[in-house]
Length: 158
Image 1 (cartoon, rainbow, N blue to C red):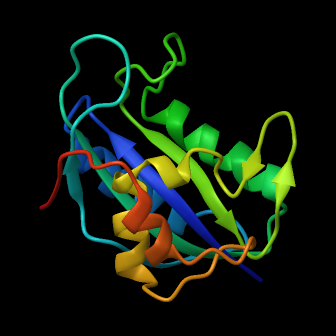
Image 2 (image 1 turned 120 degrees about the horizontal axis):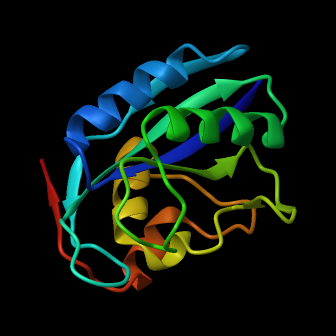
């Protein structure tokens, strides 16, 4: 079993409910268990145009699925929640990102792990640090060091 951290985000169609529903769907994935979830955080949007604030969280899973299998399942959950991929970083009903997959470092066309923009996003790092304050990335960097270096973006625990 691999320990995996998933970033969750939503800013459309009842975002907190979208995250709760996504957590329930992840708990039902084959060969996968939902271990825990961080608090929910409200964050300023990153992306084009005027957008509502996001609700973000990080979930910890344990899975026997291969990374791309897990990605396919997560994208199916996004699609079931009305996710459309028309504008990069645009408003969305649900975004599920594989942040860390055990100690693996992957660079596939469809999946990069650790998530390539994780260090720039306090709305990912803060909930991840809440779950695992002593976490070390595969590169050896600590989550605390990344959080200290991360650009500040409005972030409020709900």
